[in-house]
Image (cartoon, rainbow, N blue to C red):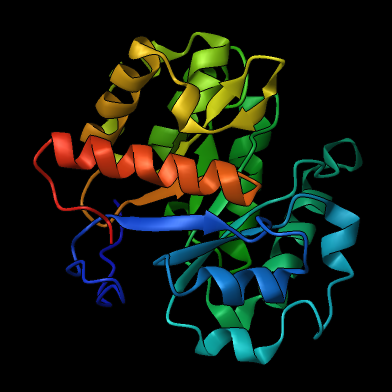
Length: 260
């Protein structure tokens, strides 16, 4: 299922290498400035569309046409506060409107925090497909409890993609998600971060992972196929650069080419 990234990485990786990404909200600046600063060092940028109303209000100043000239690919993290209480049709309209807003960047994947009910995920998938967004481009992320396991029959039946978040796996005891049946056919992205000891829901640098966390990180990376995206999901410069060093160290220890 993972789509082949036919472009050549600006950082020397071949077309089938994994794609290294950073979020569009690392520096204390707007989306456009963040993207311009990150583009020289990353293959892909994750548009962090975390808030529904704020992102629906984005205009040319936030997502200028000039961003399309940056030597990166793009994906979108859909809002964390999608209006599920207003109904699945409303959620689908929001997602399709945000996709249209970023159409000049041609995002290839859309990361979704799933609803509580599998039937709502199935209905949303069908509505998005009717609006032109194929299921394989919608990546369901593990967020809490047993969510991904509960949604797994829908993910398999509708051929949705999957994004596994390392920090969430550690916080919620989801290590067994790596053994979900047929995972390799759906896994397209890994979010790498460590749980902050002071507030586990907050993302911290990979530098604080213990031996168990590093081992799980290696297992996750080992399952991610060529062409898959590795997002260092950190939201400040120090945590991002520190996590980059850890990732490079893991790649070197495994005898694999560094990302850059």
